[in-house]
Amino acid sequence: MSVKENRVTALDLKTGDVLTSLPVGAGPTHLAVNSDTGMIYVCNTGANSVTVLDGRALKVRATIPVGDYPFPVAVDPARRFLYMTMKSDNRLAVFPAS
Image 1 (spheres, rainbow, N blue to C red):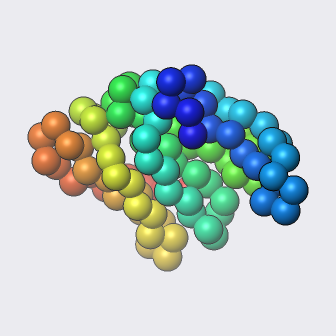
Image 2 (cartoon, one colour; image 1 turned 90 degrees about the vertical axis):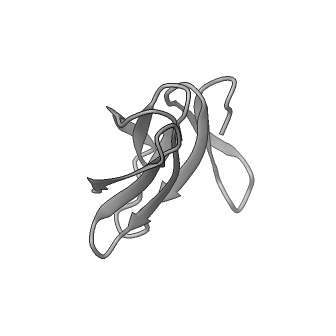
């Protein structure tokens, strides 16, 4: 992740080669992966949003407004929920996860 550039870079784990660099919202600081679906959820703390990336297709699927200063993020693949705290107001948010 590049916090200053607002991007996430995908690497080939065998070679270390850069596969692509995908745009996300301002201030990406944390991410979580749904290992069942390959979806990646990036907390954009500077934009109060979460960017959903398709890790298998290496594409941005959506950016969703979620609330003030979201982090950290966790995925429950079995129940298909995304859990995130909103640091500014100490709130836990639960969203459906693909």
